[in-house]
Length: 468
Image 1 (cartoon, rainbow, N blue to C red):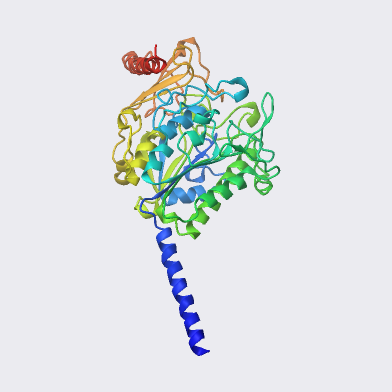
Image 2 (cartoon, helix red, strand yellow; image 1 turned 90 degrees about the vertical axis):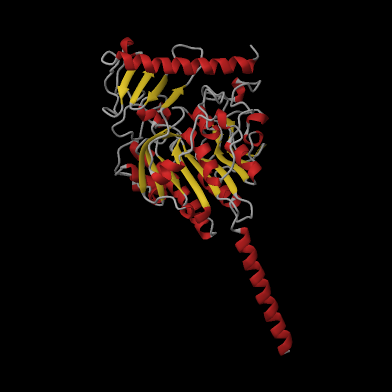
């Protein structure tokens, strides 16, 4: 009896030891995990770590405390679809083949709208290197099979295809028809009454169970994009704030809580140290009617979503990698942009970029680790048909920024016909309150030539692709 008991105990110990060894090997992939978190319509300064005093964002601030945050970080575009295309490809949205927001399928039955499938996404960068790839949350980059996540390098997709949904019914409410929009890969699924934020967290946790293969997740959180649907507990927390700041703040803190759920999961499963986490907003806050005409905070900057002013383009951006010896709790004032994440993450993960000559972004490794000067000399922005002359655009060289056909949805700045070309010096006035074109015509001319030459290149490539 004793010998049998001893044998049983020995077997249990041996099995336990084997399981522990298996867990250790499973939990330690050879390359770092990567989690890219993109918020939606978040104002430039809407985090405590960026100076907000009326919000509660402990989890996103936790990322800032364990990593590096940028103060001059630019979205690719001030509107959803082009911004996402630029982030995922490391290319300006014009070069990525997406000029404006993707149309809904009912208005685009032939599926022409969307980011061309020929574009190389982050998923297509990391998948050949042994990564499991997932897109969770908002897509908004096309609706035909080749333009949906599974056609753009993602092994798995959970979320909504269109620009926004009601977070409980999962319907896309717009001008009609109002359509249900919740998918798992290409299959429409129904989870009525369940909060979309919680569903996303479940999916991220499921996909990030420890594995010998690293994961790459693009988590595009549809918050604080309207409809504002923060948790009741946060609405109560912010009850003394005026509307629409109250509704917006509740949604921001709900977003922050969801991120905290995932960070806790990664920590509890022993993966946080080996996970590179990037966070940024897709562009500035919304002043649309559906967003109660505001709620977000751009601080001293003018502009908002849809605008090439700083309040439309300058976004909060953070990178954290506890096990990668990134500086902790530091700030970088160098200017950079979301086109830079593609080459930066490839650099940090030691994955070769398959199309380096097509990159508009640059690796920020030395900026992050060594605080060197920005590697950018010039940066471009534009939305709308590139052949039109009335589109909004901007070009920056050093501190100088030239805007074409500027607008301010926040209506703090008023532009006249004389301001169709609008020159500012960001080192002297980051509010962009005065047009310096007449005072510095030579600078305005230089930047205009930079924009026109860049646009010629865009149109030339467009012509080649169309066969004209």
